[in-house]
Image 1: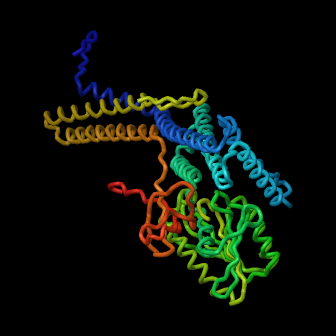
Image 2: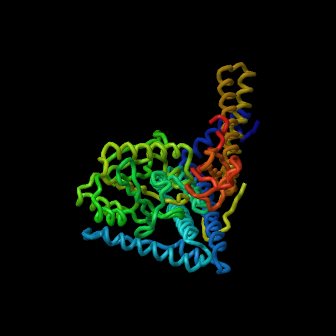
Length: 366
Length: 141
């Protein structure tokens, strides 16, 4: 009991508790946004730290691969330079001819990376060099992801903008999915595991077996074989190193030389959530992703030659596409191979010619 | 619970002291609610007392859950990513027997695998598939 002058104020525990709750109420009303922002920033920091750890691990693996295949004692300066390469897309104010400009820029970028890796990884063979190029590209992607998240985090913190922080916090699950997938891709490219994106190449290889593929064009291989009285040309990127090749150029060359009754393209397709991995999807058109240059070339040549173009896609998630093939996707490869055979039987007459294009990264596939 | 970043150029750390302060505050309020509830029950204000005790216990549970979650996240951050377990399936060209074993670097689909031990011919088997081993399902998932 506290006596204040004449008045008598009773401060027992329930009164103190009521005062405490009122104080909490006022604090929450005044600082609610700041507390919420603090919690959101902590969430971002956790993800940022995790991505940072992955980025460091990816750099370590890339460096390890380079050192293993190099006579240069410390290629870290080279790696840091290569990981920061940027590709500047051509200006699109006048879009006429932009596809060929982009194609040229992409090929130049590819040539430059391969040539520089060849200079450093002197002990590596073609397959190992292709794999190292992809490992470095994945490490660069992880580094870019980390830089982007860090940029918005610092910007949000600096400006105190709840809008920036809230948007970033909402994107965190997606950032983590992407980072995990890239980490999986890093291991796959490092050890040479076949990946989900290579399902098209695996279908082509299984249709070709036991016939051999021979090199054609840039980073591509072709196999001429027969299927139930039909002449079948199989095309895929050059394995077993990590490369997607340039199927557009190869298809243009082949179609200009021969008249095909049908072109079938097999590729992996990103599934929607709720769809089962490894199921197949059929359609019409060029089944090929990427920046669009290869797709353009294929569409152009089949339109000129009026050749029907069929597409078979094997559904998978983004993570499955860049990480080692799962058992579900193996079933998809078998199903797609069977379906290609059925389509050929249905659409190509005996004695006719069919071109089967297995699209995707052929790492770990002959 | 502090985990600082090694790169001095980066402006983030995992200092969780303010978060722990908030949790401590929640525990304090919860404890006072429980005390208040017990006092109310002793004075035969049954409804108010029960609600106070219930809210206090809920606060304690929430504080415990958040502490547990925070601990899990901190341990996840410190854990280095691990590589996948990949298997190679081989098929003997002579006796058609199949074997599955861990993947070895340099192997590829439709390439040559290990010699067949079953038919005794010693010919290399054909690598039919290389695939990711399904991770064991977590309990409760």
